[in-house]
Image (cartoon, rainbow, N blue to C red; front, side, top):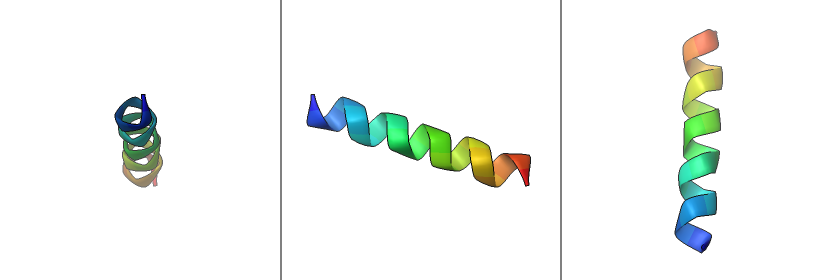
Length: 20
């Protein structure tokens, strides 16, 4: 479960970086 949270956090971070 922890891995899933980590993956989600990375995905959100990547999307934010890509948005900028």
